[in-house]
Length: 436
Image (cartoon, rainbow, N blue to C red; front, side, top):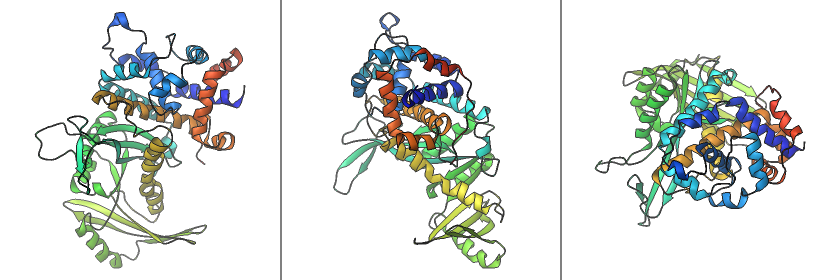
């Protein structure tokens, strides 16, 4: 078995190991199509939709040119519940997703994450051994020069042009070694035509947090947020749900808190810690129990000095109890890990072959469903890359994650899986995450 087939087996094992009931979950998806004219079952369509993103094809059009192979169809029948004799056209996928309420795919993603949490896959990587770090941030999804639908947000540019766009707000589970797994999504859109103001990232966050609590009621959460969320409402929600938070803090966000922090610092000289690690020096200072509109917050600052680099300053608001024993962890494993939603999350999905900003459809439902399928596929890819395959192996054998996708496509299209290769699927595998 060559390394390309080994990679394919790793992907299949990832799905089977982490999500044995995945295909049964697909059964909850209703089918609005005429039963007498159905050629492709929801299972078969779901598999092709996932492969669209797992193999990083980039557009619906590529399905016709890259997946139309007899060998590929035979391979899919051997290892997945694929029942069709052909590969569905991209327009067929779009038609099915156009009639599917996005709530169903969102529910499947929730079931996937719950299974991982109940299996305690991520327990060793909790912040302060207690809290799952969940970063929340918005990003651009689609934009158009003309109004796309009644839900479009619009913005007037300096040159007088108006753009119509669809941003999203994401909640991602952040693990310290690099994984950023999508937990939930709130689409930022104008749902009320007569509303005096457009929908916004902050408004969407209130809806997202409420649903996050409903879907994961017992989960001990620490929110990692940017300065936009430094306000009384977010603090109130966190306290109501018994959550912790670490919020990037700018003096202009809450001027009264910033002023009190500067005034109290000289009065608490014991709240200091200097940490040295190789060529890095970090100076920590903090003030506890600063009142903001009835909410007591702690402010933690870090001045970092690296050789041959300009010094950096970081400040966070948090309701975690800051001490000399945990300030380093709160800063480096909490506050500074928020950027992973940008890098391992949005940047990878935009520039790593998933083509997040591509309009896979113009139908309102299909747009959301393609986005949700991308998130599900990215979860599977990360579990393979950090689990059975390993980041070190990817770098050594393939050079990049994109190359892994290319090798998977080649192997599915060109090499019929033999009995020896398939026998590896039945062997039990112990999974460790590559945390290097």
